[in-house]
Image 1 (cartoon, rainbow, N blue to C red):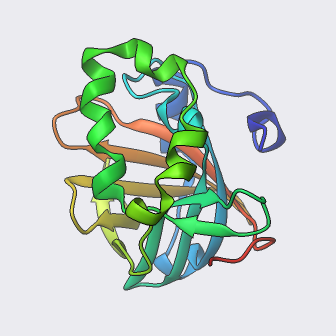
Image 2: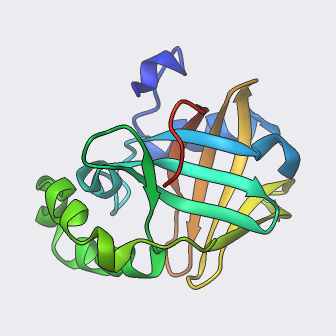
Length: 184
């Protein structure tokens, strides 16, 4: 997915992305139900590029208690599988210490470890929380100190702010509703 398809002007700094997020409307948790294709918003955050390098495809919200935060395409590209985020985000700390790890692709290694990292159980839930002074739908990871807060860009697109414990600024991404692939 290309960012310019969702936004007339793609933010390139933290200030621009934060302004877009703050100016966008809050959403109710029910708005998020469905499967969403994602893309990173490059703002200079320490983990910029990591999801792209991993081959991350998006997220799925089945209901308020059943959320799959990390979806990847199967090798044949015809379906999606869910990764356990507790395994995936172990690389986040490495990317802060060794930023060059983001300059490589990890699509094949992640696909090769699918049997070890795939999960069939939900690894997050959906609630309303207050973030930056606004109540909006928030994906709360079960095993990690991370919350993804969503604001509406359009009827089928949102901007997300990933609030990571220990990070002074959120990491931004966008999601577009896309039910074209099913979860295996």
